[in-house]
Amino acid sequence: MPLPIESNEYYTLDDYYNLPDDVRAELIDGKIYYMVSPTQEHQEISGEIFRRIANHIAEKGGPCKVLTAPFDVKVNENKDDIVQPDIIVVCDPEKLDGKKCNGAPNWIIEIASPNNITNDYVRKLKLYKEAGVEEYWIINPEEKTIVVYEFNSNNGETVSEYSFESRVKTSICKDFEIDFKEVSKVIY
Image (cartoon, rainbow, N blue to C red; front, side):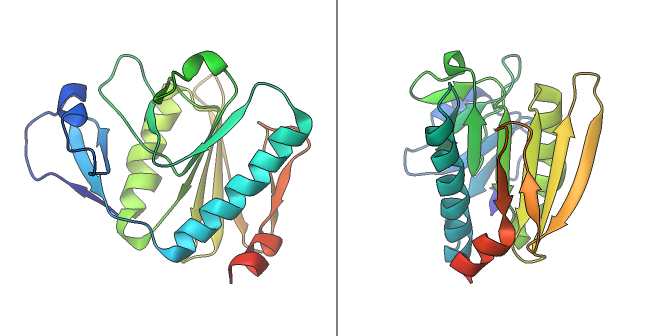
């Protein structure tokens, strides 16, 4: 659950990197949002989705890497924004420096909690679209929905919504889909 610092001050990357090591936070549009530990349900969904993507990438080979939070992503070179998405897929190894992803990942997955709905559906959606993320999924365990945003280079987007009964394909990893009915069986 992101909690913003109550201040009108604009925070920078230096402020972010000066936070204590044990503090999880994100920096979006000059505001620092503290993050609390995720729930067990959140972690199980994240782990299961990560496992399926990682297995597919390992099977098919290629340059893509899948990483999970906490891992810093500086989505836009020209802005002081650092986020820690739940899962990212990066297909350009030059963007990874061992500590963070420099630039927009190809695919970002966030698992929403009731306390961060605005962050995932508004702030991060805008940030990811502007930064050039190709595909953004928001998995909402409470609503049992998956919203898929596909952004194209002409600043357009396609939005699709699915339930936890659906098979959801991604355009990032060819011939790959996640069967959320199967994921649900493992989690619930």
